Length: 303
Length: 278
Image 1 (cartoon, rainbow over the protein chains, first blue to last red):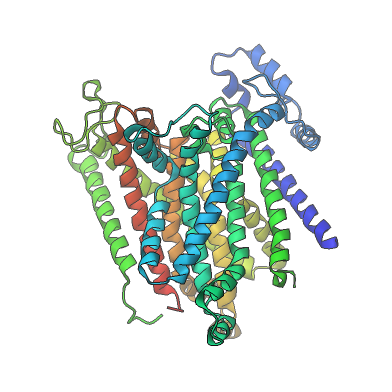
Image 2: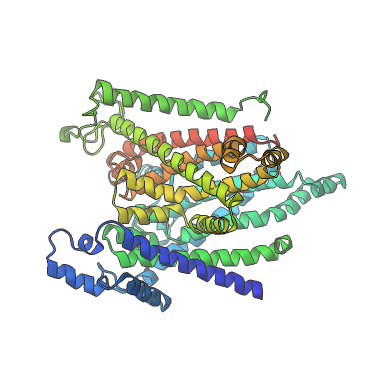
């Protein structure tokens, strides 16, 4: 129980530090945000009014205390551009990102792990060699260069999958494919290497010498590899949940990434702050859960 | 690490690909600064409305033209020089800072150790692209802004490896004997620890360069890059004309993937090469 509390306080402290860093990065950056928002033609009065509205005319320590108080009570301010509360915007943009993240991470966790373990099992054979080459190539196409290629192949040449217009089931395929390819390539490499690392351990040799079928050994070794794989999947999930900005802008998906992208484009600081605070909380939450799960799967970690 | 080890296939193919790209980049650099232009006025691809979106291998354009009518080959070359320049600069600074901080967090006094650990972990747990976006969107778009953004997010990775490797090396007998005969902390770092941990760091530096090139292009794609010739910015142009001129997207994607495949192959090969188990 004390350990649980200790970890909880650690997570809370990290979120607090991240929020503090965010506050100072935005305030300390060169240039006046108010002038950036209003543009060069703004009058002095307009600037004063907006500065007052944003609370930027107060002393820095008072601004900071107000900021912490607002964030602590869940008030993230209003969007400067959309005249809407940031929390409302976040709620509206969450579902598409969550769908995208859960489906693509689940698929890649399944395929990536299966292919990687199988490649490790068939080490130095054709399957392994081809798999290594394919995963290396898949990793070398960043999302923003993979997505146009997939669009050219599936939407323009073959004309089977539509590109934009979020809302129908068939629009989900292409973005998910774009995410699943790099995610499963990473997992495939990780699980293959972990598998190869584990099979050289003495207890596996004992199993072999006892005459256990290779497939039985495969299952037992896979179980040992799971915590490592789980960690990688968790990192992937937290990254994708924070908004896959590039995928979402390419396929016009109204998710968190899109919100952040628009926020940056419109210099909508409250929205940018809001999305980044949301991501921080998501990371801490997922790390927290994974730490907990790791202990359940592998009791060695506790000691 | 015996010297009789054979260079493996990955290093061979990877460095061949990298060699081609380097040759291309140096060729373009020489052309734009010494032949096509001068040092004060380097040659840059000019836009020309009448030659917009010409397909490859036609009308005297090897790879066609982009949507501003610039030769795609020239734009691509300028982008390559920029990407490589950014990749090397940022990796140099991140690796330098990361190695030093990693070393300090392994052997420094206690308060320094915990401080370094905390900052490293804090930056490390966030996806670097998010921090880079934040820094770029507030610091404005410039070369040094970009370098700053990516160094801030790049060093913790090196610091972690450097810390782990330093801890491993510090317990070896020859380092202990060096300490016993009274070698000072700076000399210990430069002459004894650094040469021992450098091979492992080299693998990460090579892979790090490809990471930096991808991050830079991602920022360019989102309109936050430091140059209009950034491959990301070019790809986001290509995205808008994907229906009319798919060749632009294909050419850009493939040339970028080629460079990254080269770097990744080299990194993988070097890892196997330095791996004491193989």
